[in-house]
Image (cartoon, rainbow, N blue to C red; front, side, top):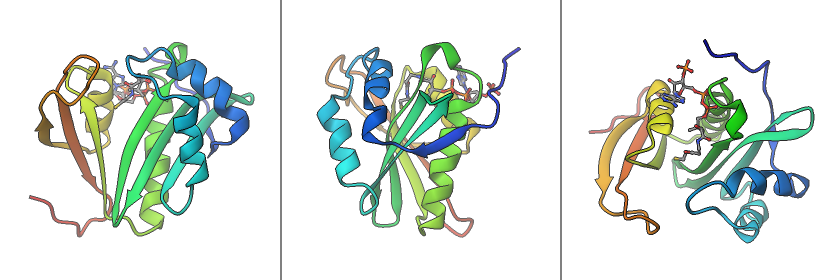
Length: 159
Ligand SMILES: CC(C)(COP(=O)(O)OP(=O)(O)OC[C@H]1O[C@@H](n2cnc3c(N)ncnc32)[C@H](O)[C@@H]1OP(=O)(O)O)[C@@H](O)C(=O)NCCC(=O)NCCS
C-alpha cells in the first residue's frame, strides 16, 4: 500500500531551488542542464511555467511546461526517487493543468518514452490519451515517443 504525501506545497520554481532540482534531474538518461532550467526561469509567465513541490523547504518534485497558443506542452516532470508513488507527480500535473486552464489553455500535450510505464500510468490516470508515435525520438537510445493529449475544457473536440 502506498503512503500519500500530506497536502503538497507547490510553488513557482526559483533560482534557489536549482541545486536540488539538478540533484534529482541528474539521475536521468538525458538530464537537463542548469542553463536549460535557467532559460525556463528567464522566460516565465509569457511562455512557460515551472513549479516545484516542496517538503520542509526541500524540493521533492518539479514540472515545467511551455505555452503555445491555446496549448500547454509539458516538457519535464520528475519526483525524487524515494518519494515516488505518493501522489507528488499527480499533484504537480493537476496544479499545472489547473493553472493552464485558468489562463485559457484548451489542451495539454506531452511526449513520453514508450517504455516509461510509471509516467504513462500517471498520464493515463489523469485522462491523457495516446494520439501519435514519434519514431526514434530520443537521441540517447533511439526510443520511440508516445504523444499524449488531454482536453482542458469540456468543449474541446479532438479526433
Ligand atoms: C513519472 C513520475 C513523475 C510519477 O510521479 P509519482 O509521484 O511517483 O506519481 P504518483 O504517485 O502521483 O502516481 C499517480 C498515479 O500514476 C500511476 N503511476 C505512478 N507510478 C507508476 C508506476 N511505477 N507504474 C504504474 N503506474 C504508476 C498510478 O496510476 C498512480 O496512482 P496510484 O499510486 O494511486 O496507483 C515519477 O515516476 C518520476 O519522477 N519518474 C522519473 C522521471 C520521469 O519519468 N518523468 C516523466 C517524463 S515524461
